[in-house]
Image (cartoon, rainbow, N blue to C red; front, side, top):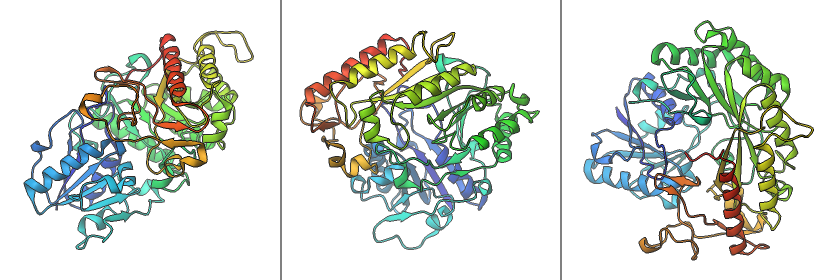
Length: 456
């Protein structure tokens, strides 16, 4: 069977080629192993769907932000090729009511164990929705089909554009799932929160394959919570340092996203010895009232984030602090608390966690957006807010601030044409909309003033 995977256009991204979508590479590998004729078309750089060739099944990945582009591709495919089957998956599967009728099946969840049945099914589910059972044994999955991806697997993923080795970078997964259930995250609606780990040997074998077959020595671990089990992290680091191909840790460079707990200094030292260069830490907010509302199981105060940043810095790692503005629970004190926090971590100051350099090397600030599937999206009243309209305003209002709706657009502060107009995606019960808008502007201006904010 001829199967074509499609990565849709993402015109709002500064660098749409920052990383190849690892999900479709896994699915392509499963189908190719079963003998299907598989190809992948990357339209992220605004490539038009009209360049697609005929196939029996088209599989389009996407997020909620991709709905217009995915619908346009589906309508083009049905209009051009007629009797083809169109599947759509990824986080976009949590927005079924917004998807085109030209889409035959909406696939929800991790599909490696079910993809063969889905493409072969003779009858389409009445609901058009297929919910997958996630694979338990991640080591049994074939490695992602990177050989089917045309062009680089990823761009410059390190702080400051640092390039430790030539050959670009690639995304890699060593685990799936997250033990936390943050109110702003939709992951638990797609797959169980149970964390499943690959063996250290499997991960290192894939890294070695990337070095030998593709000349890639730089990796971005895209685990939801890389440090969910510290013993597992240390075992992985031991395996990296035992690999001759990986230079015993000196022949690779990698980064990972971590939660503020569990952590310890020894684990960060292990990571540094195994080639880790930086970590991204989910700070979310420096306002305890916000943290207790949207992620109480993970964070209850910013002190944990400061501790994590300090430990990572003491191990010689660079750090990126991940924060949001315009969140539920934001109040008259939030801007001051976040601004003071950003100033403190971005400068070398005396204190209990004093180090020779600043605790934070980069800030990644995003606009809070209630994503379909998240608890805030499903039950905004629990969080003292109301979701504003998500469809774009008319053409003449597209760049205006204010009005009754916020456009569907990237959560990022910046796009190809520069800074986006800052606009809240929610209204709060206890904080006026204009005040929330001004609070967001003030926080972003302070982040920009540090000189460490990411614009990619």
